[in-house]
Length: 230
Length: 230
Image (cartoon, rainbow over all chains, first blue to last red; front, side, top):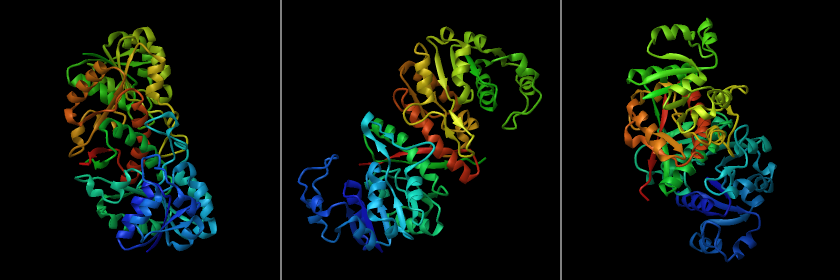
């Protein structure tokens, strides 16, 4: 599949490398490829400069947002939530029209420290905002509930645990579920939350996720939904 | 232990009956006991009139909020979130001073339909508001993440699953954990989220809880936190 990953940070790199390793034709989209490649400083999360990662992943091409979008059948939004809508507008509504957009960005605000608050919550969500801004695009919210290394390799966490999908288009959710299964998520572990308003559920869950991560001292955690017998 | 349960709805009744069954000296607090007993209509959730429940539970006394608070060593807030602060002010700050207050109310707003939104979220929580309004009271947020029948009988859901506590006072959390263990929560299932700001995590999780409940068609569900090995 031709896949564009938007965002050159840790999350985008982990997803792009894994998807390329699975045999997909993967590009990474960024605002200004030359500027991204020229950067020599580490990222905010201590990630090495992109150019160094690029050298180790020659199979993944770096393109400007519109070119990355044009390349792709499926687009993954792995940008920081605060800039997600800008990045998607840079790709272009026409380019995104009719395509599956897997939105895994969280609208995190770290200005109050840890755990982060959200820039949108409760009565709206980033996933819904993206769907509203790009009505011709089939937005699916997924993967936001786990750390990026777990997204692409769920066996890092032992035992049963779940991943969620939410979106208005059932075919698009099937496409995303196919990618999740390639990552290693068992079919039964994928829980469908219904339409895109389900994005609110997984985005608001992030507060519990980051609170637990702070207590445990690790981002490598997930939840297993257990149902009663009544 | 002398326990006051605030709130005469389904949640308050389930908790009061279970605590009385465990041998505690339990009262239920309400604004106007005579009015509560005089009601003949079913509640919004289809609960029978309180007087009928009272007949079946003669060991639980119904008292006005201040009297209920005065009776108690531990107070459980099982009111509807929208009226929780009013109910606690009716009990009285002096009466609540120094006491353990287990706050299990969710600030739910059903005016937009299901799943409910929250009247406070993201940058604050009901648990934090209660602690702020009653600084002399030892507020512990817990039990809000499961349906009331599961609160008092976690074995209704098979396998491992967790319950959370959050609060500023470690001794108060120990008291609450003791009640949870009497309900049947294994010691290892109780996860401490730290201070009262952890209330935000469990209250915001409610969106995922109610979304899942809507998909499953049952409120009898919970989550098990699974940690990675990395």
